[in-house]
Length: 293
Image (cartoon, rainbow, N blue to C red):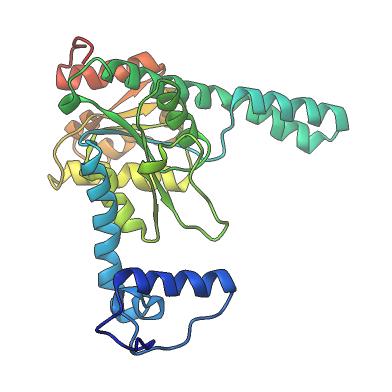
């Protein structure tokens, strides 16, 4: 007779069926020494098994992207707070209707910054359309942090061109989820920022940084540091929105004070249009549009 603790007859399917049944019924899992280790959430979430979780977050996105032929990506960073022009105009109309000065100021700022959303969207589409004419091995896929704002815009542009695109989302307290334009089979969720950052760089052939906050700056400077120190192969780092970046960071001051070398300013370039961003990447790799595959 088969019993709940009969290890000789329990299959992998049985283990997952047990977990699903508990979840569907809202029954909390009880400690069970006989539960298969990989099907024991309490065990996998212990502090001592953190290394195993690292490995899993490393392997799952890597194997899935390999299986779908995603070898080369262009990573797009930028603020999660920017909205599309359509949404910005809706907010502006609503703020004008209620006559709230603070709401109107926020809506006007949203409308002003919507240009970046639309430019990121255009860039994503541009990369997808050009890459579609390259061989499969040479194609470049848009990859983002998977959230809203600039990330959504770049994924959206690639999606509208019919291209696969990648989202590397992060679990946050406010329950951020992947945006709807990421290819479902390439939408990954991470717990660890470090593993997520590693995946950004594993396939990245270029980085395009749109205006953003702490997260964008963190990711940008980590990549610049990796390239500067030789821990990563040189890749084009494109700062989109020259006036924003030059106002935000005084790179000349860093050179003047001897904090970086003059040649370090060659690690990145400034652009103001999606076409110039793509041209900078093409020029770096001497890419030419090939025939349709």
